[in-house]
Image (cartoon, rainbow, N blue to C red; front, side, top):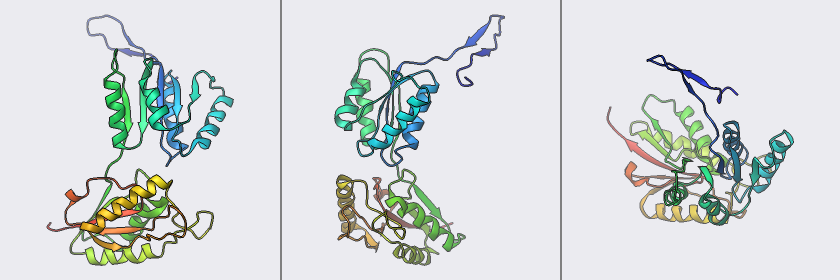
Length: 277
């Protein structure tokens, strides 16, 4: 009610101007698996409260959480016709939804590659321009200078880069540390990371569990093989895991930031030293 309330605008020549917001129609909401309730709910709620209907397509890896969320929304009074849940793979169900002629807009959280595919598909459609709201990948960096407290840096790095098996949009991917303190900071991170217990998340002692699925595991392994060829390993990932799809924390030193061109969606940290004032 607050967001959609009419706004009276100033009229410089005496006329009356009122801005009224209204829903655009049916929005396609495509959400990721790594925050399967928070991001799903945020997309759906934002579209509903602005007067739209929703076709919700959750990640195929986490369908049950989305189903329970929709059940709760329907029980709370959201009409079944206003919020519909469509399960399935992105390349079939997601692509078909984006291609629907009556779609008023698309919200997507996920990889930059997929967002560009959606962008191109929408651009080719006839009729009015269909808006796309996309939150995609990037290289999250931490900049550490010589005044930083190494213990605090090590704790923050280990938490951000390796917890949740590095499967957060906000996970640290690139550590830029000043050469004056680099050796000490790296040694402290190495020691802290080696204390992490990688294993079954059902065990209370486990700090780091498997990645989401075999496809993700294989993708991370390809990145590790590439890094093995040109970067200096600082922390060796366990390549023979006790559990399927378990990737241990790993860290590599690269010479230049420009070498870090892709987000590795796992517990893989790249480090670069910088110098000067």
